[in-house]
Length: 108
Length: 112
Image (cartoon, rainbow over all chains, first blue to last red; front, side, top):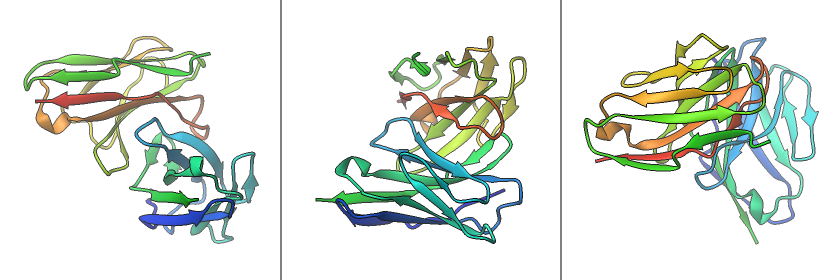
């Protein structure tokens, strides 16, 4: 199982890049890494996922180390609306393991 | 296209009462999931249904039962509610095992 470890909280200045790290040293070769965020107590919102290559979409970039033991989610230009709890999740088949996530606060 | 919908949005129960939480998705997804989220915690998987006609236990199944009524609907039942089941319940769905999960807005349940 890909149990993940993330810092409890981070701050980022508005307009700057937010870099959120995740350690998933127990991930196996066929497990994807997913990133979701949760604003207030809404349902989690999908951001991005990857297996071993770096990925980019309209919301963020995902950088996965070559050994796949860690990854970094990058929000290139953080806004106040990006304040949320960010979850890095390992996925084995039908099981998602959420952990407690990183609470990101974007500061004006 | 509403995505994943959940009813009710809020519910208060007394200890020992029963209730069913409803979830429906209109994306024709094969798999559906029920999670609970306690204050300050991440989501924990209660039950899931990989396809119509099948259900399996997740991380915290005790005290719950589920029914995959058809491809669209997946319900969660509390037979005898306990205060420890006070939580926010999220339903999710996805097409396949490596696809994105889409979440509903949640049901906030309080058991007195």
